[in-house]
Length: 235
Length: 246
Image (cartoon, rainbow over all chains, first blue to last red; front, side, top):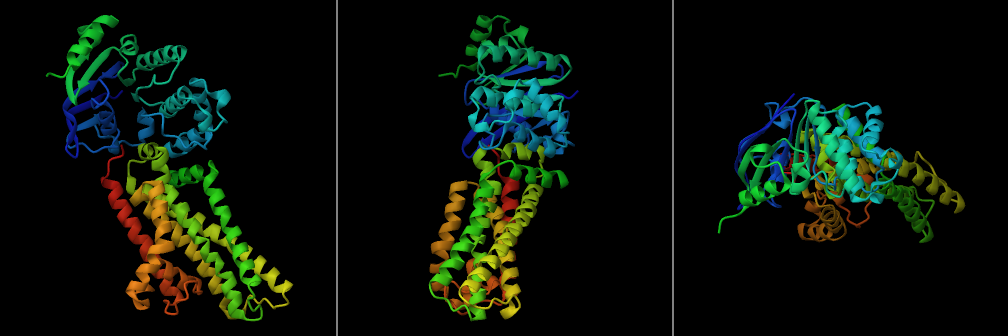
């Protein structure tokens, strides 16, 4: 199983430095919480890992190679970025069928993942009729389609109700227990404390902490105070 | 390349908007031919028969927008992210879209051609004229109309990949055709204007809607349009390779 590695990553957009010299490893078989306030560079880092954004310096590797060099990438990496990557007029099942044919997966997988995220009964509805939580589930279904060994999820609990959030925690735990590498970017600390083994904290584009959760506090309050201290911007 | 092409067809077959757009083509043809006849066209003149059939080329305006949707539409809805995750080789994604959209554009032109033949034949019969498929190189006008539909779909893919903003790309394309090219054409004079895309498509259709007499030969108009399609596609691929998808 492949680990996710970020080494000396820097990304500038014009005069703005979104990520500055960030390095960390997300080990296989663990859920890694990728934490930081809004605008701290989490999404940019994930997009570099996925080959969508070019690094200004450093590298981001999956199983030792950049995303663009993976063979059949959809079987290796599943990604959930934002809940906006849908054509509103396309039916949920068709959205997944498009991805299945692109990724070389059999159409049978479409119904399997629809069942896995509990959307089977609404799969023939057009996405414009979906709530944010349903879109989030559809995005997760897309990420799971290739049964990948690495999952990169940006704010996956966004829009999920409490039952959905609990379901997601169970899903992430079971994916990691199968030996997969799961990276969850989030700014919702309470979500993460109950789910992750490993924590990477960034703030203002810089790494503040990377290591096992136990090193900064298992309880919500301990984690929150550590998070606030680590992400505080001096001055 | 095969999964890319298959996924492009599947994308197209699972939404309605592109088909509604293309369905307007036959309507334009019916309205155009009917308007021509009702305004007193001489149905005994084989040249007028060609003018009627040249309306197929007008439907290329729709395949142009159809092509723009191919890439700019994916940016609008954010589905481009998934497309590039499936196929990190972005240049080949643009190439697959060019192939698929040009093919569908040509098919749309072919349907418009059949509709144009039927409507023209019907009006000619109603007005007592004689409609001859063999007269006045009719088939060349029809082939030119289909080629124009194909070429403008390909140009649209390039424009959409270059501009990426759907509304901006469609507005720019329509403004060029309705306004800018006419003005530029007058500034350049007819000797140079005939190399502009819309003038070239008139040469391809073998019918002048702008009233200019100095058009390229039909094959020349076709080559010029292909050149525009290739230039836009090359620029689109180059810019697509470099840009971040945020």
